[in-house]
Structures are given as structure tokens and as C-alpha cells.
Length: 158
Image 1 (cartoon, rainbow, N blue to C red):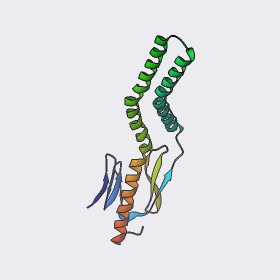
Image 2 (image 1 turned 45 degrees about the vertical axis):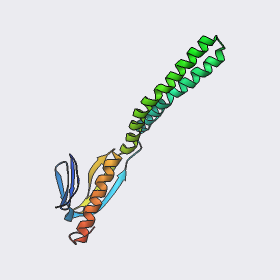
Image 3 (image 1 turned 120 degrees about the vertical axis):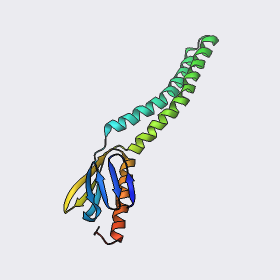
Image 4 (image 1 turned 30 degrees about the horizontal axis):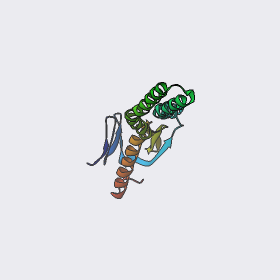
């Protein structure tokens, strides 16, 4: 038996696909397709907030420098304001690295739910619904490979 995918709730093998304890033999699956759900505005808003958090310190630093020049105060006040503004801008570096990591993960997870469907014993069955785009892709491809291998052995029409 070949295992194509295995996690805590989904297992795809050369014999069957098992999702949350429900098992579907590959020989009884005649079709495989997927469906994309509606766009999640919450995820997009979260990405916007991350972008704002990354850009915010730099904008604050530029605004502080502009303010120091505009005030035309004493040299000490101008240097102090510019110094603090530069420190704020430099603080964005280490924070931005962590925020970029969250930003990348948000794209790996995706911005809409995805579903995996099969035709089992003549009836459509939704195997899985997940907002995680990476996991969806891994499971869907594993199912495709398992069904292709089954078809090559001539056990079931796909």
C-alpha cells in the first residue's frame, strides 16, 4: 500500500481515501473535482492591516523628519526630532521581518475556502472543505495521483 498523503484528519493511500474516519475505496470513486468558495474579506483586511503595520513606522519617520524641517526650530530640537524619527524608521526592520512572515503565511493559507468533491457510488460527496490553500493543493494532488495509479491498474474508471 502506497501512502500519498497523511495528516491528522485525511489519509490518501493506494487503496482508499479516509477523511475524519470515513473511508472511501478508490475503486468506488468515479470522479474528482474541486470548488472554490467566496473570497474572505476578513483575510484581505488582515493582509491590509499587516501591510499598514509594516509601512507605518517608515511613514511616521518621514513625517517626523518633515515636521522637524517645517517647524524651523532650534538646531537641538530639529536634531532631536530627526533622531527620534530615524530610530522609529529603523525599528521597522526587525518588526517587518516578522510581519513579512505572517504575510507569506496568509498567502499560503489562501483567501477563500476550497472544497474537494468526489463521485462515490454515483453520488457526489464533499470530502473536505478548508481555507488552507497549501493543504488543499497537497490533498487534491495526492487524490489525483492515487486515482491515476488506480486507473493504470485498471481497477476503476476515472
